[in-house]
Length: 414
Image (cartoon, rainbow, N blue to C red):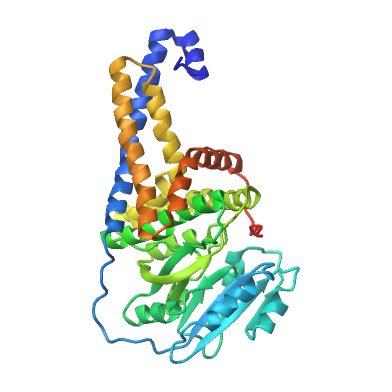
């Protein structure tokens, strides 16, 4: 009963005994390899559950001009809420300068921004995408006679914590060169199942892992939203990440240049997540395309540099993000390894079951730890019961999207 189609076909070619041994051997090898990423997740989960390290006491306070870039592509419906949240932010002593970069817009994004009283830079170019829009705006900013001392990037579907920009600027004054704030998923009062599951994924990726990395001495991963850079960083490492996952690409470039972003655990930004399958499919396809692009461009060059320069921070970043599989494919691989060993002897089945259960427990524990640190409501914990179906859907999306070009395709929102 446990034989799959592939095993049955292998039996016809190799014979029953050889096919079983082959399947069992592949299952054992897969389970052994999977201990590397699952052990890493266990370490990050435990470290992320610990209280964040307290910053070294210092009286350094920010003294400089801070400019916020808001890249927007057809964001007329949600932009006003983002700009209102920025208007409520505690401004640094020299004030806060907000610029909306209306990139290739076909709606009233620019008009909405002007009505909110902020400066608007309109861009029309065949080079489409958030990365191109950011590079264009940064070049224009840095060419000014009085360029800002720091630049923040906030997406146009975001609510910004009132104290985030000032806290991040003070981190720069205290020695940091790039700061990534907490990137949370918005939690509607009546959230759908898909929103709850997206919230759980964001809790692991954007809150738990950055906390764990900080505890273990790693560099904060850039999330593309809620980022603040010292201007000298943008001059030293010009923004040239133009793919769909431009944030990860630029993060790797910073690490290769010896610049380690820091995580700010106290505050950050909150962004709306998809509430229906259609919107989630668009967003997931874009993310998967972007990850494939970044892996192809950066994985091996960055690994070689980490090896030659004995750079553990760069090595951890590349291995964890560009070598180890994401959570959903990892869960699928754990299940596949257990099923392959199940076609062997009774001893093989018991060993495969124990290994699969242990690795599965690590993955479930990682998800629960993420919900714990974000103080998720009980409904989000209950939504994890649907996780196996979501894992299968994410794997299918990853396979369907492989090799397809990416673009700045806006996620549909209600």
